[in-house]
Length: 507
Image 1 (tube, rainbow, N blue to C red):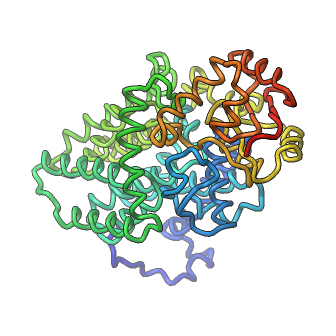
Image 2: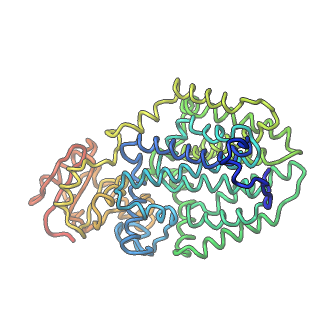
Image 3: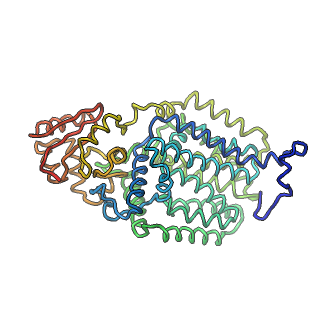
């Protein structure tokens, strides 16, 4: 392992002299060349996407644009029915700052650039851990997660979880190796980067200390204090400290446990919270499960020599169990399984293990797991995509400052990106509406489905909206007929979208 304070006796001119060029000289350029390779690979993936995979990307882009226009946000009036309308916490503050320099590129290109940066950070984190731990073919181990198409699908989503994955990998390695400065810095960055800013560090801390204890070691209280100090410092320097603590608790208790895992009848949080079916595990995650199991077996046998591999195996097991409950933890389970096996592979002395695993993973994906790639490249499948002509028409017909009633929350981010300075129901999560006003939320949820005769009047009076935008979905047919029959109402049908102007009387 490379230790702090170590140095090389190379002068720097040796690499310019072909007569003295050596393997040590080549190794000097390995890291930057590998990072360049990662950039190219992630850029190809992002360019393959004709449009962001999910509405969340557009939401984060829109928040960043609002920060550019209004400065750091402490309220969010653009979604007036949300709990955060008056007490906002930017739980992904650094991610939004990362978007800032690229806002002028537009949603698609800005998200591609940010996706390349964040994706490269993940691959680089895996590579550096493998390299510092003297694992053969570190670059191939870093690329191995890209063979799991379920992971690649989540990896291609330009969302804050990308920063969290990179931070989590570095966090656990720094914790195990006593790199206190790195550990403190990563712990400090977590509250500025991700909503689960203390839950994930706690899980990883528990994995590390469990591995250390069963290996005959003692609890590292210095590392625990470094984590506690870093997380506390991150919360303190966050621009929305008090609201951040509140939204963190709401996300864990109301959104994840009550909403996603226990389920609320009238709240849908999206397919990502659903578990994989058995055939999904076999198609997309079988090799990750095998790698995690093999790593755990090998690491357990070698735990007395070094608990690091076992710690990553324990973390992979935790994330595997979470993935059983919710598919959104795939993005942690796969890379932690890879790192666990990479560290365990030092006990096997199989020279070409990484190349063989990469080849096997690629072959398996081509044979059984290619469907996610088809989805990623298929623009008509983007449920929240608005055609440019539709956007232009809506911009002309819906003035800035108008309030818009929508039949769902899943496309609010794109509406915010395409129709800036308008006001919508709720963004990012419908629970934020439910927690603010359960009765009004229930009315909003039922109105498009039950289509009462006075639907237009309810929209005007209870929601203070003149405009309505909904997907052109058959389940809303009666609702559309009711609004269409309203005096002075005008309807615009644009492909898969329907927009109503209910006339004056609202706002």
